Length: 164
Ligand code: ADP
Image 1 (cartoon, rainbow, N blue to C red):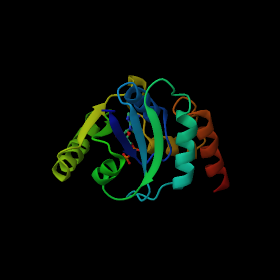
Image 2 (cartoon, rainbow, N blue to C red; image 1 turned 120 degrees about the vertical axis):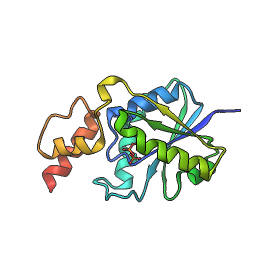
Image 3 (cartoon, protein in one colour; image 1 turned 180 degrees about the vertical axis):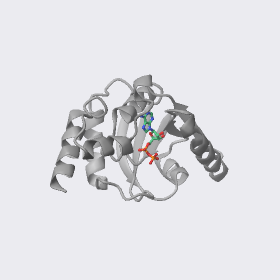
Image 4 (cartoon, protein in one colour; image 1 turned 45 degrees about the vertical axis):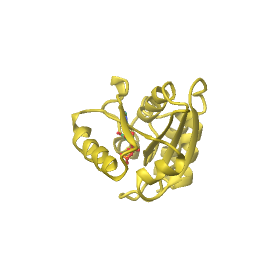
């Protein structure tokens, strides 16, 4: 049976940390749905279409491994997994600070659907302090983010912040 997983997140925008996790996961699973939250708790900087387009461009080089599909989703992650025919949720774990929230989510999701298991992957240590929020903050002040995001994302951020 093919191993199918979902990788849910906001991806506002996708960073090299997310890409690292997708590369690692693609060596384990046959198919990964990168599921982009349409209505996250925070108002995203980028629209759902922009976020999906950036992901599409950023993962195009990942060839040997899982088939990747990028979809938008609303609602519960476990429902999204069921609709995709996935029994695994992939999450990235950077530091201890992620652990408490991720444990809570994983246990809640397991309570909601026993058949779906959360699998945590650790990124390369270069990315352990990296998240979309900090990248946006640095970009908003014109800082160099070239080692944190693909060049195309860097361009999009630059445009966003010079227009506003
Ligand atoms: P969310 O809004 O669900 O936190 P994100 O898009 O920020 O969504 O992240 C999606 C997933 O990717 C989460 O599991 C998060 O821990 C993981 N992630 C984000 N940045 C990194 C990183 N630098 N290294 C590893 N995992 C990361």
